[in-house]
Image (cartoon, rainbow, N blue to C red; front, side, top):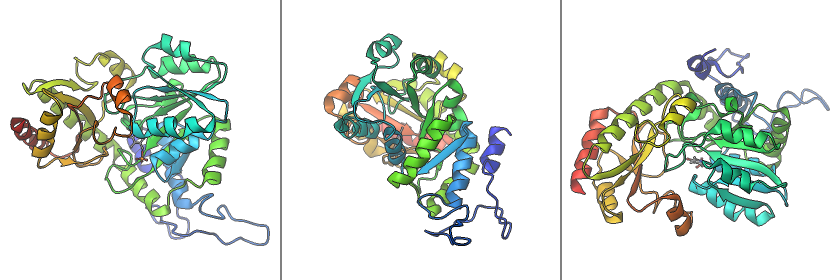
Length: 380
Ligand SMILES: *Cc1c(COP(=O)(O)O)cnc(C)c1O
C-alpha cells in the first residue's frame, strides 16, 4: 500500500465484536483472564492495550518498520531509547538539536555514568574522530530544531553500522510523510507525535519505530518496565490525526515554502533558514534525502532581540506559542522559549541567535498568513 492508504489502513487491529470502523477506545486498566493461568491477548494496560496496539501498528507501517512503540510524550520515547545504554557506554549526539533532548542527554543520561559527546555530525571527519571503542549509540536529528540544518543520514548510518553502533534519528520535523530514516540505514526512528503526526495540538505523545528484532524486543521490555506508555484516549486521537497526515503535510509544506520565499525577499529579514530554498547550503541534500521540506522553518530579523520581540508582539492571527506541527500557525523565539534549556554558550555556538524566530506554518490560507506576517514586519 502507498503512504496515503497506509495512513488510513496502517493498523491491522479490527473490532470483531461490533465491526466498528474506527478503533474503539479501550478505556480499561486490566483484562479478564480466560481461565486460571490463561491470559487473553492483553492482561494489563501498561503492558499492552488494543487502542495502543492499533496506533503502534500504524506508526510502524508509516515508517516502513516492523515494530512501533507509543509513549506518553516524545521525551518518554527518548528516555526509553536511552535506557538501552548502561554505565560506561559512550554516546555521540549531534550538537544542534531540540533543547529538551540536549537537556535529557547532558543533565540526566550523562549523570548515570554514560559519556555524552556533542559533535557536529555534518562533519564526517569529526564523527570519525569522536568514535571510541565504548561508543554504543549515535543520535541524530534532521532537519534540526530550530536551525534547519540537515544531516546526511545514509553517510552517518554507514559510519555507525561498520562499528555496530545503534543509530537514532528524531524524525519529528518531517514525519514519515517526507523522510524515512529506516530506509536509509538508521536503526531507531523517534517522534514527538505531539507535532505533525497528531497534528491538532491536543495531545502530547511520542513514538519509536524499528526494524531490528533485537531492538524491538528490548524496547518492548523497557516500555513496560519503565511504564512510559500513553493512555488509550490519547492513542485514539493520534490515530485519528494520522489519517490526514499526508493531506496536512502537503498543505504545511506548500505554505511554509511560500512564506519562506516571501520572507527572503523582505527588507526587514536578514536570512531565512529553510531547506527548500536554493539559498540553503544543503538544498541538494534536501532534494536527495527528503520528499518534502515540512512546515517549520526559521528566520533572522534584521536587528537583535528587540526587533524580534516587536515582530512577535505584533502578530495577530499567528499565535505566540511553543510547539509546532499543528493545523494552526505558531511562532516563537527559540532564545527565550524552546531552547532556554540549553546553556547560553551552547545556544551561541549552535547559532541560535537573539534575532532568530521559528515559525510553524499551519494550514490556513497562505494570503491570511502573509498578511499577518507583513503587518508584523512593518511593526519592527
Ligand atoms: C517536541 C519535540 C520533542 C519532545 O517531544 P514532547 O512530546 O514534547 O515530549 C523531541 N524532539 C523534537 C524534535 C521535538 O520537536
